Image (tube, rainbow, N blue to C red):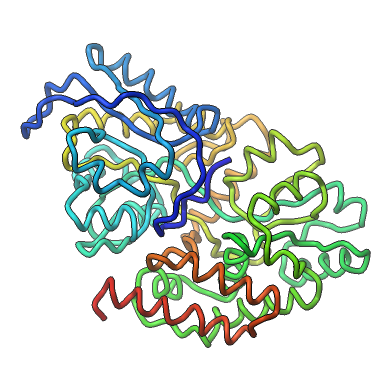
Length: 434
């Protein structure tokens, strides 16, 4: 399963990985055209879509660069997340690595001068032409490390987004059809509630509840709101729509029995395993669950976009970044280029991932094609709205605490909005000085 890496605060996520002994690269002169070693780090599982695709990219790279040794190390996510600044500023750091996108991660390192400006390469190699505007947002950072403008400091080659997973067997058994509007969604949930079934699984102790709130808010939002909330274009009023609508509707769904009150203490894994076990008709969560459900779920299941939304939580996947200290920058650019080729993009897609430059027609499994097709639909209409915890460091924990309170009824929607408003405003002020 892909980890919830889209959280940009410095939280450690559980991941298993193997590492190999780090080795120094070539000389650190300005001209690295004669480099004979490429040190590459990432934290994808070997059998994951990206792991499979990037293993193939390494094979291609070796074929096209005879005489160059690739020293690949699979790192645990938390190794890079917690120590990235120190690691890449040392002689033991990589020439290219996977890193989390967002203001508090790639943006922070770029503002500290630790990442190479890739703007010229993005233009020369056509990377900019392959990525939609909303995908480019996470690749570009201002001098203050705020995403969405400025120079390129990373390149994504896969995508992710929040969608609705549903158990087709439970839908058929209870006479429920796939909803295409919010009204149809609530009618479907009423049907399940009437039969004693809680229709929507979530988890208040981790990210799912906050993402459900954000999806509800986005149903009443436009791109200007996303730019204000995520990119600080204008002040955000937490007591007004769309955020007020999101919180009010969330609380109403709890009252109506659409969301279980005891889900306040559940973690994402609890939500996911309940869906796998066939206990939950629907969950609203990310495409990172897709591969696991495909491998483990026995019931018939599928996905559909959150009904009525043109904006959805989602973004590019993590970024390939090239540390300023890299001793093989030109080789690193060549590797990034390979990961965006159709062969690698299609391989990612056929292994349950979402390529950013792939062709859905080349994807063999109909369910995989739908996942990718829906992402392409959202991306092409500039509908990727990033994630609710992204705006400021530390905001993930704020949202978790707030929506646990909303689920268990200890705070009203307005109280929750006040709870999450101040840390947001304080964080924006710290980043922007305003």
